[in-house]
Image 1 (cartoon, rainbow, N blue to C red):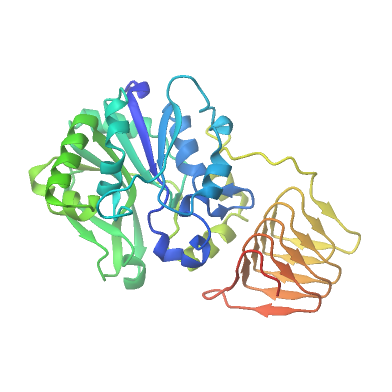
Image 2 (cartoon, rainbow, N blue to C red; image 1 turned 90 degrees about the horizontal axis):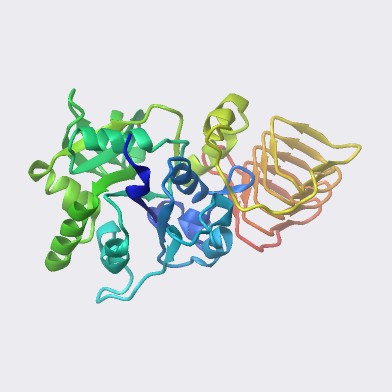
Length: 373
């Protein structure tokens, strides 16, 4: 087993934001709320900590105030420590302004990467909801003497879904021999989960080379264009996961958590997903409330009907209100007799008494943060 103390984890907080612009108008993708009480960053962060990686940097870009507030000093993940621990890496200025891709982002934090005593760097975006142990991935990388190892999963995708993905061709020896970036193809494919293991010295060479050639995309400029100059391997992840790359996938993956067996797999008690604790009272149910098939966080007060919903902390549902197939983020207030179906509300939204809002499963209505409807 690799000595995981020699791995530096790097999380990219702002990748893929253009795919869910409603959710990322006021925050980084990494701090998008998920699953009643979590944020997207909780998953890569907890996976790293559970895999004994205790040196983690989060590379931010913009809109990162709520992310800073959420992760704080890293205490909830046991990353508040004298050596190693959690490092928040705000964007440094460069000649291009704010970075355009992973490579350029790493150029900006090159002194930090250089200063860390690590053999390997684990790169991860914040767009995948999964419970993954990185220890076998590092072992696999070492055993194959790989330059880069890409964690991937197999699934069936439509042309539209493939447009946000990196698709890999992997042979029987787990070597990657072709890389398609955002192709318009449908069918069963190996899809990158945007998690990569790279040797530290090898990565530093890649960053220096990219700097001198004005390259910025890890997928296009490294994985695709240099594929045949390197040993690139694919590590297959075959447990349940969600890749958030549209409002549709965000909605469906939140809703899927109502299934207890799936919830148990992702929030595995042996390798828990940690988050910032908010001291709330338990949820309170009024005498006329009816709740079915829903995920309800602490601090909620429910006096109406809730069906097939995910309610974040502190949500209040008024008397006679009917809320179905909806995701209501923190501190949303639904007035008396209001009716909602296929709605996503951001934080601190007020839905007035008697209001009726209805979307569809593929196009839920989205209500912006702090709005009163």
